[in-house]
Length: 69
Image 1 (cartoon, rainbow, N blue to C red):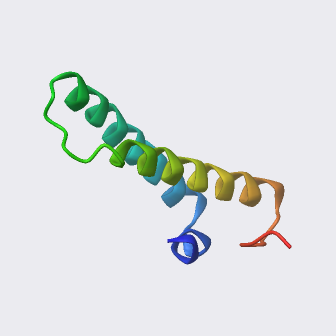
Image 2: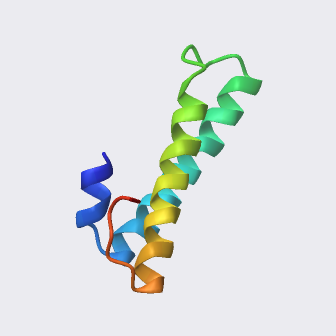
């Protein structure tokens, strides 16, 4: 997934963040209604949002690196 993010444009990353936030919101409502079975999904969604936002920050700084050294 990390390689996928390095190939995306800033617009694509913003759309991804919005999609993941909506999925996280739906997940939280599912938890409240006891409809969710996979409790790790919330953690994975939060991590995906963080990765995308980090890549967006790198692009806005003009830092083209995909990994920290």
